[in-house]
Image (cartoon, rainbow, N blue to C red; front, side, top):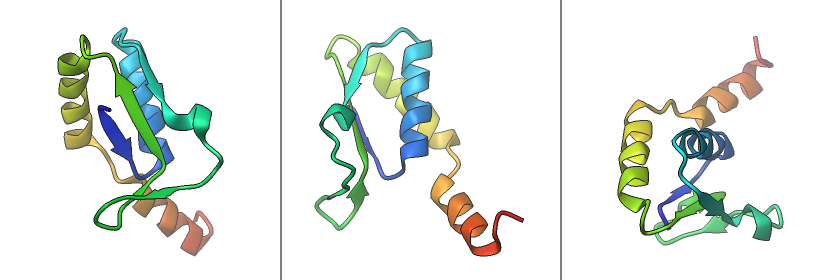
Length: 86
């Protein structure tokens, strides 16, 4: 497992980054029943991303870059839900 994400938007963007870099991956969406998992520490996980051990180092570099530049989409959605998107 390379990463787990708390919001689906970040997960989808990161999966696109992996695709753009030719890194094959799988996620747990095929097993998804629409529920979230609560993991140690109380965090919610909506998506886990898995890559081959051969691609792990490069994928981990991409993940680090993504997380350092990532906007927290949960805050954006929460704010828009409160004010109706205005």
